Length: 186
Length: 125
Image (cartoon, rainbow over all chains, first blue to last red):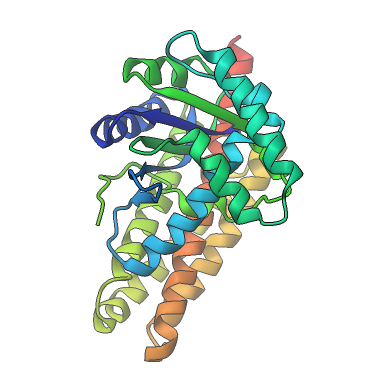
């Protein structure tokens, strides 16, 4: 199944390690990673992408798209069924919250970017980091197990669900690196 | 790992490497970009040729994605070649277009690999 996943972690270092661990799963043939990137949401709510390139234009273009993709991972109704938490026992709470956030935003979809920004906050709270990826996976265990090793929460939506979203952008894959890399912030 | 999977993984790795090389030139001076243009074009063309060969005896899904990847790589070869003669004002846009194509080629090959891995797992389950 083709999915978008967000593995939300406590800090940047854990995200870097999780990114490499994700690509290791690909090398082992457990999943196929089509693209991935590390992002961080600062205390003011701004989403930054840890790129391998310091070109400011590229960084900005990637940042806008990643924000939209994070929003897509949370909603709308698909989040209720698709959101899951790998570590701990709060899966039900996370799923319900995702559904509510999605429904609220869906009812007021006059501005797609505002909607994405609103839902992004649900997936990636201020001060947290995440690995965002497009993957093909036959089962969810490899990524969920890897994420739990780092204490991460996994949000997952099928690519087909996201493609049906009102604010879907076909450019999402453009914002993910098609290989492992050493993330860096400006 | 089967030979076919291995060949697909190698092809994807080469497309990924092309993306890295082109992305690396975005921040470089024009002389550097132009100097690498012919080499990038030749690499993309050669990879397109080898990817076409991988499509034989594949299931429809993987075969289609490999054909798509080959087409994208041929386009990339053309993009890369045009960098050599691009004007200063054209260079950034052409380089970005090449990055876009290299990314698309890597994605198509990755999707073909996923299809191949999925069918192999079905056989073994």
